[in-house]
Length: 422
Ligand SMILES: CC(=O)N[C@H]1[C@@H](OP(=O)(O)OP(=O)(O)OC[C@H]2O[C@@H](n3ccc(=O)[nH]c3=O)[C@H](O)[C@@H]2O)O[C@H](CO)[C@@H](O)[C@@H]1O
Ligand SMILES: C=C(OP(=O)(O)O)C(=O)O
Image 1: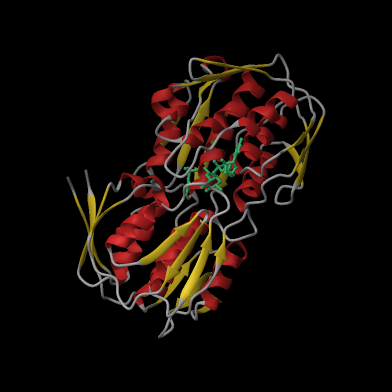
Image 2: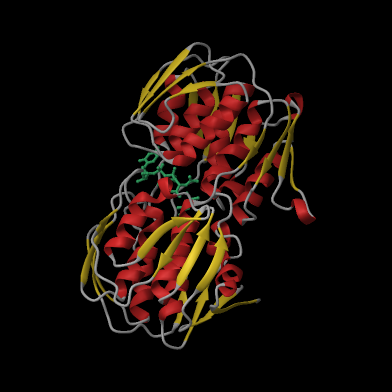
């Protein structure tokens, strides 16, 4: 298995480009199932999760592929309605829970879907009850057998769904189902993430009639059919945030190009509180590190709050602050897996339920560590940039799910980092 080897020390300088957003690309690829014909997506990040979604679509009978050469960030999905087998098997879903995003489009368009239950993962139990509640409210008949969700509906009908929990993929799944349902749908207590808004934008380009995406109430008037589209995926705000922290923790000065300030407000605010200088320029965000990092308290909440997907990275920055920070994780019940690994590098962190008390230390030291999930992997690399000596981050397959060649981007900024092939 590959590992990433980082030698701490160099301050990062220069410019780096953010790739397309994983969490927008995945639902948008799934939305191709809603229309016959070929959809073309640009700025699609080259990630293992995207390859998995292309495999899911191919397994069902679509022709889904990534182009090569200069077009390598373009993906095409060709759908011929009669040739689709509406099933997503366990072998693929178990490697990527976002595969469940095909459920809504399949039942809406093909009247049935058989999708493996995603199960939990390292960061939490992550049930899909709200996805199923929403589909049921639109008239789908749902059964759970042999680890699979089976959904059937001759024709979905508009309805009202009040989500008990704010869920990103749940909102997306039900929104994709409702676009082809007969009549009017109201979704309440929706996720407001930019990726939900982006999906709605794509669906509207396909001919859907959605209003309110990006707010907590989304209304949808069902249409009879949709057509394929061309679309360029928005920049990844979590990758951008990770690169801003890389600049901060290494004592550097980096322009993160294509980062969208409006999508990163809470992250920008916390980095400023930590003493960093953040400016918007040249279609990106610049982060200049302070001499001393100040402690900052953070609570993760749904968008527009501080994103859980940036919690591990911010915690690493707080590990070297000149004081004590309190970090509370409100979205996932088990998202402190990076803490034990950070202890191995000399961090002083105490976990009290959903809260981590982080006492800044003078220095971190390099160590062999193990990535447990996607953002934990990124946080360990960030720690390695600052630590004295060498850090070996094992189980890099987690990182490859969601970051496009992170080590190359960091090397381009002056980091001493390389991938060691197994
Ligand atoms: C592919 C994608 O976009 N992934 C993102 C998405 O994941 P995902 O959509 O899976 O996360 P959710 O927003 O659904 O989860 C939020 C919380 O709701 C709970 N819940 C969710 C659904 C449900 O039916 N029942 C339920 O109880 C979850 O267990 C969790 O505690 O949003 C998360 C929260 O911002 C991010 O960390 C992920 O990067
Ligand atoms: C938790 C994440 O992703 P996923 O929902 O795909 O597991 C993430 O992007 O940090």
